View 1 (cartoon, rainbow, N blue to C red):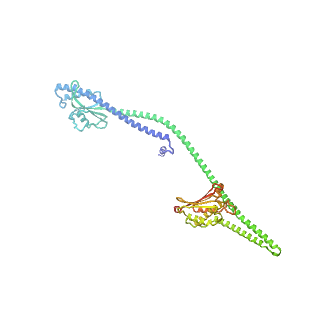
View 2: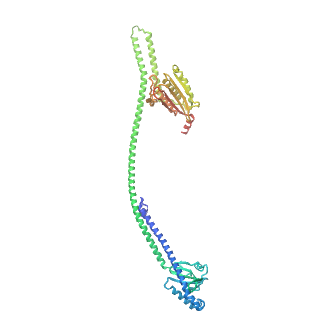
Length: 524
């Protein structure tokens, strides 16, 4: 059983195996069915031929009985009385047997129109009556319509007699005839039994012949298709091997590429870590360089003033009489003032650096951008009295309230830095434009000036710590970096645009509206 299952259910699909099994089953079924069909057709044809033979025979014997028995008997005796006249019965029996001799007629019955058997080759059946309705074939013949029935061996006939061999039972009308053989009125029914024992042999031969022909045809077709399928199977097998090899090669290549990608990713991570470390070191170096540069100038001033004071003091102490002029003493005050200013300048640089690296904790609340801009401009205008005639400030604020969620002081610090930068950029004269625009979800603030502008190569570095294009005494380069950090902390964005030196600059800040920012925070 396991071997049989393995044949029917192999691990791999076997085209030849399945084709052979399927073709064998189909050939057997078709041969059997076609053999049966041909045998049935042959049987029907034999029955038709036998019925035609019966029709011809009964027509013949109908005429012979009238010619040799009925007409002579009527002329001699005047009537037919088979029941009481043995001589007439023997003459009829001899006439019938003479006409049946050498034929395949096993039995013959003669009925009157009432269904009574008035003659039979089996004397014991004479006088036997069949009621109307009991034998439909007989009823049909009584009504003038011939009928036949095939009685197979082992069954019983219409009289209840056992049928030892296959017989064809035929019923035909029996007519009155004249001397010329012309039919007149129907006077009875003639029944004959033909021997059909050869029918089984003919049917068997027909079945065998049909099966053989069908099997031969199907076998030839099977062989032709087998060769085609065998060729196709070999081609499929070859393609399957190629696909299998290609798949294995592809899997191997994928595995190799995966390993290569992993190694490359590890190298990339290592390189990225080194790059981040290098960027950190570079940032520290930039920070240290900027800080050293910024502190070096005031410290140089402090050191120079200290040396000058020390030399003056030694000169005074070594002078005879200890007399000191007033002008010489005033120098001490100037030097000490410079030392004080430069010291506070160092303190301011350190303070800005601390503010840049460690922002104070912001206090977020709903604030109006327009109000902060107005307040910032009012406070800064007092620090630019000498430039008011040269610098023109134009303010275009949105009529809609531009409210955001943010820290008032930090936002004001951003605006102070940007407006101060615009003042510095337009010291020689120019126009400063400050505008706000409320969009669907954001507030946009523009700081535009027509000042000195920014070189294109500086635009990407403008927010770097300690990067500045101003003179040393004008700035440290930390202000814009602080602005960038504050704007980013408020979920905003700051961008800078400039067409080059002498063409001014534009700083654009975008904040989310207060209602939209609340919704975004709640959604997040």
